[in-house]
Length: 260
Image (tube, rainbow, N blue to C red):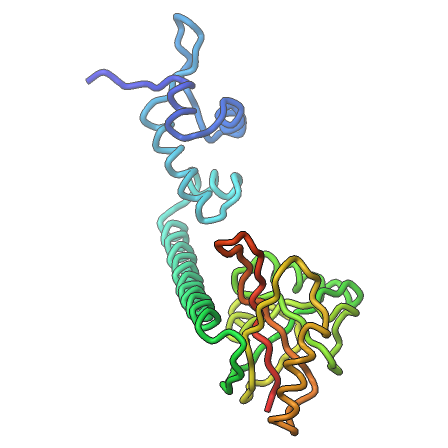
């Protein structure tokens, strides 16, 4: 049976890479194309195809090119088993991450449904432990790394503000907010824990592109004080969603709450 070879153009099209990438893989010893003696063009055979599939597989697992080359050319059976164990751990973490995101996305959906149906209605509920990650740059490198990692995983967080508080927040009271279970899953090192408690809250609709300020929630504060004299001082404001309505008006839905 005659060997089948692929051109550089074929390889670029099949594996969605550029010519320079193939040259780089060749230069570091990952690929070894045949040079056609008749025209001097590179031709890639069975081995090169298999190697490219391995490169894509190991890249998906987060391996560097150096680690990939070692995995392809230097592994014995114990190394192979260790590599498969690593893959198992990687996929377990991926499944855990998607399960977390599925739970979080379902909650986001229900929050928006609730906001539409119960806008401006005062109601009591229970909220579990929360963690605030302030937008600060003056608390050491460890804190900045925590903030950066939180922003890289922003799908787990809400933008939030805390007013009339004794917490260590920046001047504009802004922060990221997430349930404690998500912060622990992400292994974030620093943050301000707000212990779970019964709260009274309301979905507040702010129209337009206004910058958030405490004055926007003064009426909520007064209403809570009149009905719950022993409520906490802090006003917590968490962004639910932003959107345009059918009349092209911009809305910002906030869940505003106080501990009771």
